[in-house]
Each structure stands twice: as structure tokens, then as C-alpha cells.
Amino acid sequence: MAFLPEKLRLAVGRHSDRDAAPDWVVLDLHGSYPTHAPAGAVQALLQRDESFESLAERLERLAAADWLHGVLVRVGELAVGLATARSIGAALGRLAASKRVVGYVPQVSMRSLLVTAQLTEVVAPESAEVMLPGFAAEQVFLGAFLAKHGITFENLRIREYKSASPASPRSAWTSTSAHSSVPTSTPSSAPGRSRSPAAPSPAPSSTPA
Image (cartoon, rainbow, N blue to C red; front, side):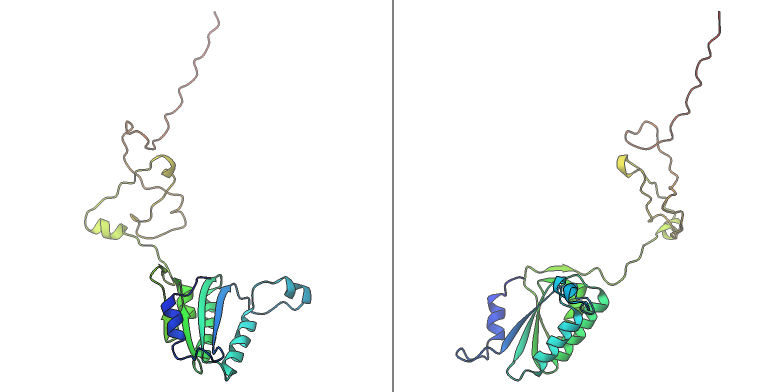
């Protein structure tokens, strides 16, 4: 886990007496968080990742602790699905209803946003990596737009990219699009461009003397 910046450590401990007992807890979130722990004792010992059920129980105990003032949540490498990330965020939101909860995200991703969505305080360092591709992606087809404006598309297939089939000049994606090609007129003298192989010449026939 990344070290906390000095300003963040000072901010969360601003109201704490130096001689008093610690009233903050640092909670590290990382791993896959399976829904339940294995039923068998051996499997439970071999499983290294904390289960979501165990995490939720730990957050409930923190919410019930009278001595606790706040929780600093450090979001690390999460190998969880979006639904699990949202469930973790909901559990943190219930904790934030009774305690001060500060989220620290060294990497801003869709999962870290879901985890910290219900927190009122989220801190990211200046060196944080931001990767927000969104929850869905779609292919953009420009075939109808190009045809409407009288623009033709020539697909040049060069060397190792000869099998590539671009979707930009298409109007829709079909099951045969990945195997079909865009017809182009390519000069045979252009180096590196694909062209149809020449038909083999017939073998000369031998005539006995």
C-alpha cells in the first residue's frame, strides 16, 4: 500500500490529543473479496483474501466502537466485480453515518469510485493514476456518415495488419464483419501491400522424341 502524504496524516489527526489513545483506524482494501468464507477449515486457512462477509462484520464492529473517531480507508488493487465494489461502498456508507470516514485512492478507477461513492471525503495524491473508461463501451460506425458526405474509405492492409478489418467504414457490425474485408484498389507496384497472388502457370508438357 502507498504511504500516506504528510498533509493527509496531519488532517485526520488534527483534533486528536498527542498523549491520548489512538482514535483512528487505517483500513486497507485490496484483493478479490469473495462473498463468503469457505465452509471447510482447511479451505479457510488456505484462502488469503478476506471475504466480503468478514469485511462487512468488521465495519459493523468499527461503527459500534465508542472510542473510534474516524476510519481512513486506503483503496489499493481491487480485483472485484462492479457489483462487489458497489456493495463495499454501501458498507462504507453505513459506517460513515456514525463515524468520520476518509477515502484515500492512489489510483482513480471505476471500482475505486464505486467503493468511495458514499463518502464525503475522498483524497487522491497528485501522482494518482486516473483510468475512467466508463461502465460500457460501444463501437462507432461511420459508414453512413461518410457515404452521406460523399467520402470513400480506402483500407490499406500493410504487412502484419493485412487481416485487420476496421469497423469505421461500416454502418453496422455483422457476424461476418470480422472475416470480411473492405474492397480496395491497390496498385501492384506498392511495396508491402496485399494483393491477390498470380495464378500459377501450367507446367510444360513433355513430348517424346
